[in-house]
Every structure is written in structure tokens, then in C-alpha cells.
Image (tube, rainbow, N blue to C red; front, top):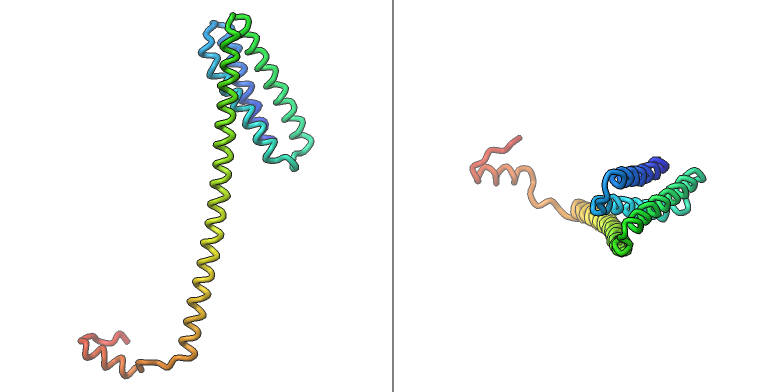
Length: 172
């Protein structure tokens, strides 16, 4: 299953790179290429996050897949960089790199915030469960104490008399 996640990231890299090559072959619209560069950057963050999340639990196959995906990412980014440089837009490439770095930082911050929220929700759930168990235990202890040490206040005869005076009929 873990290999499937890596394969999905690799397919994102391939799809974005294929789209870039297709667009670059048909026109020189660098704005169109920019959206695909963003997808590549997102794939890089996903790949790094996956590697960090499963750091000690990666199989040899997964490590090879990750290494190949990183190489593929670098190759695609070098191709795109060359497209920008050869078209005379090296300054745009530099700006794209800055924006990609900012986007990576935002995405990493978002992932960390999501993980922190998940941990907080788990902590709240554990505390709520603990409080509920303690409340039920206290209630049962009080119920046991009352039933053991208290004398009944109303007997069945008294209850029937009270209900008769109130105009109600006993249900039994």
C-alpha cells in the first residue's frame, strides 16, 4: 500500500512533466507552464513528507522508488529551467523558485498544523473518555452507597396512596 502512495506521487510528476513538454512543444506560453511547475513542487513536498513520515519503516523497494522519484523530479525541473533560460526568461525562473519555496513552506506549515490538530483532537477525546469513565464510576458508587445504607422513604403501600390522592391510577 505504501508503494502505491509513492507511485501516485511519481505519476503526478510524470503528468506535470508530460503536460509541460506538450505545452512547450506547441507554444512558448510560460504562464501555462507555471501551473505545471506548481504541481511538480507539490509532488516534491508530498514525496518528502511521505519519506519523513515513514522514515524508519521504509522497505528497500520504497527507498528505491523514492530515490527514482527524486531523480525524475530533478530531471524535470532542470528541463523546465532550461526552457525558461533559453526563452530569455531566466529572471522568471528565479521568481518561480522563490514562489515555490514559499509555497513549500506554506504547505509544510499546513501539514504540521493538521498534525497538531489531529494530536489535539486525540488528546481531547482521551480526556473526555477518562472524565466520562470517572463520572460513571462516581455515579455507580453513589448509587451503591445509597441503596446499601439508606432506608426506603416510600413503601409500595405509601406510593399507591400518594398516587390515588393525586388522581392517578397505579400502573401496575
